[in-house]
Image (tube, rainbow, N blue to C red; front, side):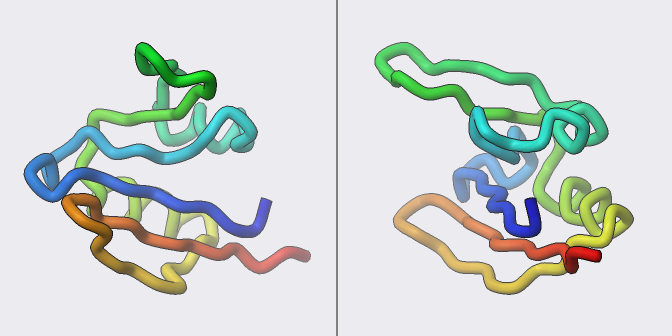
Length: 86
């Protein structure tokens, strides 16, 4: 999967960080130390880590991901990352 998003709430910029959805690469989620959760009322699962976004971005850079874009949406910070495929 060459693209991924990570996000966090502005007031929670020290963590937790949302790092994927139920279709994310399980090996990558394991590397990040993410846990899969389903919030009450949602019919989909998400992966979260307790680390702040800065640490998650550092780990993803080591795996070959590069930030393509970053924005704020309401009270949420979102980063889009890309990894070159071989």
